[in-house]
Image (cartoon, rainbow, N blue to C red):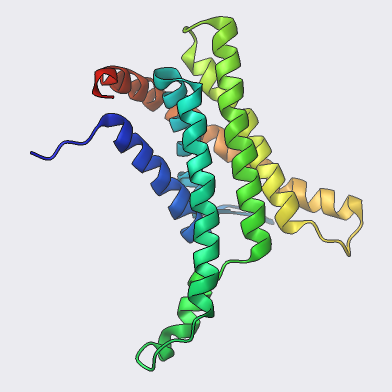
Length: 219
């Protein structure tokens, strides 16, 4: 009979969120249209908060070292996706696939700058999320999981959003003031939306921790 360990399933969901965000996060959709305000966000907005929530679940149920190991593995996954994408789009297609080559390249050709921005932001924010969650847990004990998960997620997501936007969109031909104004306009709505997603996911963190702790004897 097919049996999957709970920790393996959670890790698989985490890796799925990372991979799907990298491969499909380039698409944006309109969110708010109020007068002259048109706010669009990446489809990855549905996945990235999940990675922060899973970090908290694993720290709470399995410990900080296990969560940090997962992050390190995910960083390698992101780097491998970027490298293989560059290889795949650089190889000439056979005659059968030549007509769809431009579409293939459009979908899978990854900007080096965006890849570096994504990798750097992900690594720093995810590790920071785990450290903050763990330190709050040390000071407050096992109570107030809702506070630990949201405080760590809010800070981690702010770092993730800010670093990515700065590295991806800072223009050297613009003044510092122009860059800050433009980047802040991107960071603020994305961060607020991520924070909202974190609050919505809080009950699922409780459920995930309870579910995973009941499976501690599986490892």
